[in-house]
Each structure stands twice: as C-alpha cells, then as structure tokens.
Image (cartoon, rainbow, N blue to C red; front, side):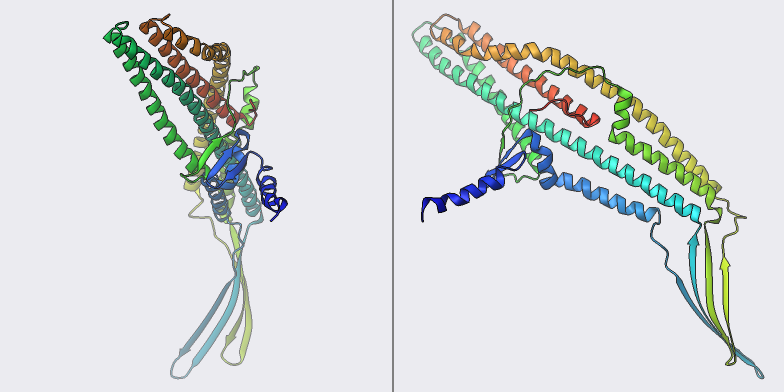
Length: 417
C-alpha cells in the first residue's frame, strides 16, 4: 500500500469535518467547539433545541384543532317505521344526508385567528431559542474562563509549592520561624481548596452543558476560542423600537389579536351554522318521494352572554400583562445597557493591569527565593494576585453573560470572538 492510499482517508476527514462551521470532530469521543458555531451545533444535536421545535409543532397542531380548520363530515341517517292494527298497516323508510355549514364571516375570522396564533407561536419559538442560546453562550464563557482561572491558580500553586520547600530548608537552617513556615503551608492549603472547589464547579457545569448541547458525558470537550475582554461602545438605544422587535413582544401582540378576535366571534356566533339535509322517503310499496330542509339555532334562551363576558376578561387581563411586560423589559434593557457600560469602563483598565500583573509573578517568586522578600510579604502578594484573578474572571463572566442576554433580547450582535 503506497503513501497516497494511506493519506486519502485523512484528506477525506479534513474535507468533511474541517469545513463545518463552528465545530469539528478531531477523533472519536472528542469534540471541539467554536463560540460562533454554537447555534449550528445546537440545531443539529441539542435535545433542548429539538424539544423547543417539537413543542412548537405540537402547539401549532393544537391551534389548528382549536380553531376548527378541518371541514366537518356529512352525516348519514336512515330510519324505518312500521305501524299496524287489525285493519291497517303502514311502513315508512327515510334515508337522508345532512351537512353543517359554518357562517362564512365566522369561518373567515377563524382562519384569521389561526394566522395570528401561528405568528405568536413563531415568535415564542424564537424567544425560547434565543434564551436557550444565551444560556449556552454564557456556559461556554464560564467554562472557558474557569479553565483559564484554574490554569493561573495552578501556576501559583506550583510556585507556592516550590517556595514551601525553600521555606522548609530555611526553617531547618534557622533563617525562618515555625510561624512563617505554617503561614506558607496554610496559604498552600487554602489555594488547593480554591482549585478543588473550582474544579468541582466546572465539572458540574460542563456535565449540564454537555447534556443540553447533546454531548455524551464521556466526550472530551475542547473550547477553541479564548474569550478575552473586548470593550463595547454602546450608544443611546431606542428602547421602544427594540422592544417591538423582541420575540416576546411579537408573541404577546399576536395573542392580543387572537383574544380580540375571539371576542368578536362570540358576538357574531349567535347563529353559528346552518344544517342542510336532503333524503329519499318511501311509504308503503307505492308511495315514494324526497325530503329536503334546513335547521339552525334560535338565539332566544342563550345569547352567549357568559362566554362574551369571559372573553372580555381574558382580553383585559392580557392587555394588563402586555403592558407590564413592556414596562419590565424596557427597564431590564436599560439596566443591562447601563451595566454593560459600567463593566466595560471598569474592565478596560483592569484587563491591562491584570495582564501586566501576570508578568510580575515570576519576579516576585525569584525575589522571595533570593531572600529579598519576607514570608509575610510573599504570601500577601500571592493572595492579592489570587484575589485579582478571581475578581477579574467573575466580572468578566458577568460582562459576557450580560452581553449574551442583551443580544437575546435585541437580536443584534454586540461582540464577536
């Protein structure tokens, strides 16, 4: 077998998986995901995504049933009567076919209501998908930042472990007190505890994230994008315009139209349908003929007053909820935009200081190893560094999560990695 035949399967794999937008399979049980490819992956593999789509299809089918879009079947009827006395007998047979027809204005309103409901369901589906993807993006950011934080704390642990050995040698030689050695040991144990807690939290988050994204628990997950701080320049947004573009707004707007239409239909449905029938009639052997007629309800005793009253209440409640939804989301959007501006202004200098602080860790360790720093100063510097790592990543995660939720609300891309 020549080299070309050996490389052919490899080239095929590269063409098959390397061109997939946002994700690839390096090998079995290993998956690499790009931040920009999460939606593409979820559409194909996520059980949560499929559940949202299946529920939407089920509700769409329910809407067709609720609005009675299927035509009614005709009815077949046959009766056979026979009477007899001492001097007379009579036999009567009747065969009829009947069909009920809805009033045309009600049928038109019913189809219009179904269109409104279908639009409401489409908006609701998009809203659920956006919320789900915002959660997955935030999870991606959390997993990435927690991994980076674990690596940074691991580096500190390595340095601290080496310096603990140095401190032990100094203690034996009388250059270091027992208190200072214990201080070093406590700092090391405290750091190991932080790493252990962070490892457990990341493992739990990764398992939940894999499950929702359709990955097996044993799959090795590689997040290819390193999420770093990027400042945002957010201008004053037109809140009312963005609110009208939100899927939740569109869903509630169309639901209000459905409820308003139902109220009109109840008022118009005092006589909702007419039934026409025609048939063949036979009396005794020599009398034959036909029967035709129609029937409809007489709105004398029941004029739909209670149903109309309920429809009015349903519409009033929905309008109040819609008004509350607009106020709440207008406030939420303003708060999140303010938060993004504040975090962007805060993280910009903090990011610069944090990056420069990482470069200063090695000189600090060298200074302690050369005896230029006391144990107290060395431990304090490391604890300050550890605190800065935790604070920076916590704020950065909140920043990314806020971006994800604002993008879900507005449907606009604020940042690209």
